Length: 166
Image 1: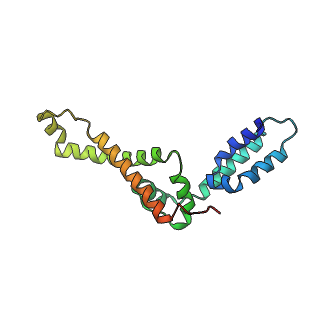
Image 2 (image 1 turned 135 degrees about the horizontal axis):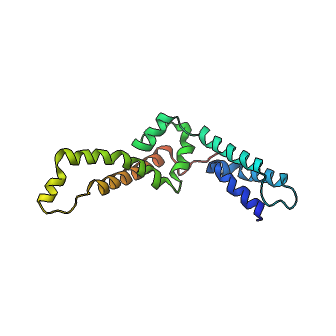
Image 3 (image 1 turned 90 degrees about the vertical axis):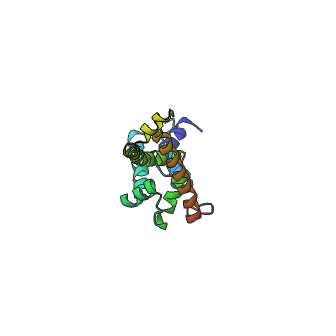
């Protein structure tokens, strides 16, 4: 693999995995055919076109904002026509970063409010417990657990073990 092909493959990461899986070789072949002899990188214009096309493809296949927020924050399942987007999301290496993080940001204010309202921190201090920052690990644990449950439920619901992206 030469430098030109490596750079083209890197640019094509702007496309969703399902697109690269089924159309990636076709696009890459077209880019390699367009390359001038000895060219080491795609032109600036070609690079912009590849990235723009990839980002537009990602946005076009995403569920509407309300359904996306329900899926991401509350674990609600999206309509079946977005199952390939869900597959890409669940198989993403960043899934266990973005989903628990967003849920953590939703849970932590609730637990902090409960902490202040019930006086849990004062109770723990009086009884000699040094666990004064309890909402943070509890919120993270709840967020990670709910993200894992959503992942399992979505795989079962959409049958993602047997889905073909074509």
